[in-house]
View 1 (cartoon, rainbow, N blue to C red):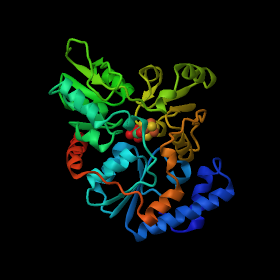
View 2 (cartoon, helix red, strand yellow):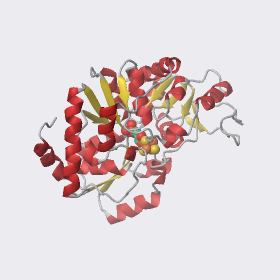
View 3 (spheres, rainbow, N blue to C red):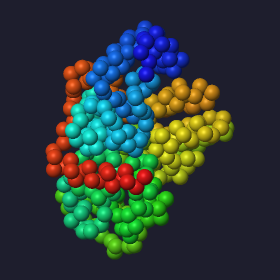
View 4 (tube, helix red, strand yellow):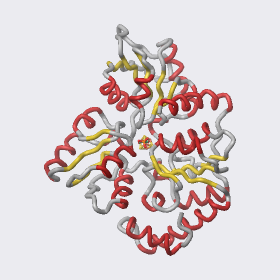
Length: 351
Ligand code: 13P
Ligand code: SF4
């Protein structure tokens, strides 16, 4: 960690000077310096997702990573306070794994379209409709939904979690595209339930239960649903030798058309380990900036501006406020906590 503000500016300038002015850089470095000082005094740890804006990503986190890595860090930290620079479901996961610690999220507006797409009632309806079928829940959900689930998964371990169950049929919620992508990898049929007008009530399904199938939900990531195959074809023509990587929250048409599919950290690792003339990342756009800053020798195309509006809520300003005032504290009902924690720890045990 950098104690001296001049050193911090020196570190940040080459990484972010193309995204902000020098005056702004100085102001942001001052806030980051303040956060780092306070973090030490209060014995806090800052966990930051790969989608954080470059100035935050490069200045204050103790750990950066994808949902799986950050869950693992949250499970093992010995610090008293966890500040989660990410979205609410991620901070909830940290709280589930550290029920006695103070877990803070700098903005309560940092939601997620996938987490909003399904309720605990919806899961109870599915379970009633398909008794005994195990429920695999993507980590991008709230704690009450996790509490109704058998096991969680992230983009980094979804296929391994599905395979670990050795079940003919599973329910995979709530991301329709990720479910279809995982069904392709694990060779399962996809069954899309027909929803009633009010999606919170029982579901009508007209099918003969086949073996090896996956019953899915219709949630979507509002960022990853906005990539199109035409754009991939255009990029291949314009940038010869380009390697295109996509997050599994993208549609199956997209994941079929790209060179590599993986969660955020898998994409970073891929870029670090391979040599290509250009790389194009079909994911949240701040991540391309962060990789480009770390690897100035790599040609990372920045032709998209698909920013996650929820991740974008987290700033250095509100992280400082969060640390100073202990806002916003994540609280989860004890009964929900216990059942949701079980689904998370079962996932962590899969490896
Ligand atoms: P990762 O787990 O791959 O970091 O993805 C989290 C996410 O919200 C992607 O949109
Ligand atoms: Fe949710 Fe999509 Fe934002 Fe990830 S990028 S936090 S899935 S809305």
